[in-house]
Each structure stands twice: as structure tokens, then as C-alpha cells.
Figure (spheres, rainbow, N blue to C red):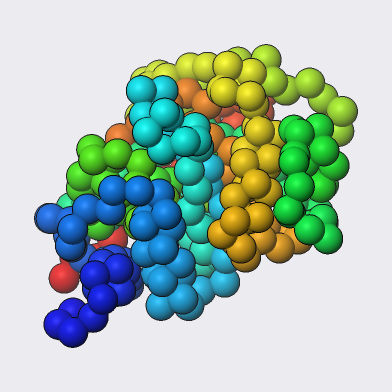
Length: 266
């Protein structure tokens, strides 16, 4: 099916076709990208093929031992509108690729209120924060048709939409609230899978906004007002299976919940 295509195009087509059909990819569909530039090139092709409206961007962490090799401590991928659920009180079913990779992550979500006229400048977290108009709690559903998506380094993760497959938007964090030291916990079927605080994550959630602005200067990311930034897994990346009940707890009384569903298998 991919005969005659450039390697990056063939990989992008394979991932998009698998995602649209709900199929798994037991093996990576081509030669593994070695650089983030190659990986974002595949991602950009796949965004064009997928054709959905981008409602946000997930930002993930690159492990410390790999930062020197890749020259950055974060990565990103698109979040498409049809996988975003605004559910501060409900328990939506969020699908994963049952024969691929699936995980749930407790995250703070920042909404882009406006954009600068140019990204081509040096950015600080404080300057980037001025373009955020809302902060919510939420759950990112990470999932890929390729079960080894996180086993081969960040370039492979980037090449398949950064391993994103959905976002649950919870309640808003009250204005001017210092949330960085709130205790955060994620439970799976009532058992605590991980704990942490946003203040322990690199340079915090607003560092994820700065990272995207810096990347947009070189890669021309299609950022837009109203898009959400899922700023990173506060308690870790917790693998899940269909049927799992997920709850993310933030501070003393904020909660976001979902149930994990399975995608159709071809």
C-alpha cells in the first residue's frame, strides 16, 4: 500500500491509516527516525493526512539521559478536537488502542488566549504565561497503534502524534491560585498509581508554553487561540487497559474521571 512513497510519507500514512481504522501496528512501519527533525517531519505529514481540527497540544518530557542527544527536554504532538471531552463532572469513556499502547496521565491544562505577532525571539516562562487565559485540571489519554511507542526514544514518540489519543478537560483552577505545590494523585480502579506536584516537573507547566513558542519559531506549529496545552504528566505515565476506571485528584477537592475503552480492531 505504501510502495513508491518517500519513507517519511509511508510512515505517516501507516500511522494515520491504523488510527483511522482502530488497528494495531505490531512493528514500527519503517526505519526508526533518529532525530527530532525527522520525527516532526513525519508528524507534520500525518497531521495533513489525518485532516482533523487541532484542539491542542500535548507536551511530554524527554528523559534526562537523552536531553544531550536531542537538545531539548520536551516533545509535543497534536490533540485533535474529536478526541477532546469537556467533562468537569462526568465519567466519559476514552478509547485507547487495545492491542497497542495505552496510558492515563494527570495533567494541568493551559488554554491559549492569544498569540504573539512573532515567535522569533527569546522567551521566558513569565512572558509565555501572558498568552494563557485559563488553567484547568485534566487527564491526557496517551495511546498509539504501535505498542512500543515509548520503548525506542522520543523521536519515535513524536512521529505518532506524540502518543496522544485524547484529553478530558476538568474544572478550572481558580484565578490567581498557586497550584504548583498542590498534591496530585492518579488512581486506577481505586488504587494509587502515582503522586507528584506540578512544581517538581522541569520548570513547571508554563515552561511547556515557552517550549511550544520556541518550537513554533522553527517548525511553524499551527498554534491558535483556544487551543489547550496538556503540560505534562504530573504523577507519571501509567499504562492502562480497556475497562479501567481512572481518577486524577488535584489539591484538596478537584477531581477528573474517565473510563478507558477499546478501539475497534481490524
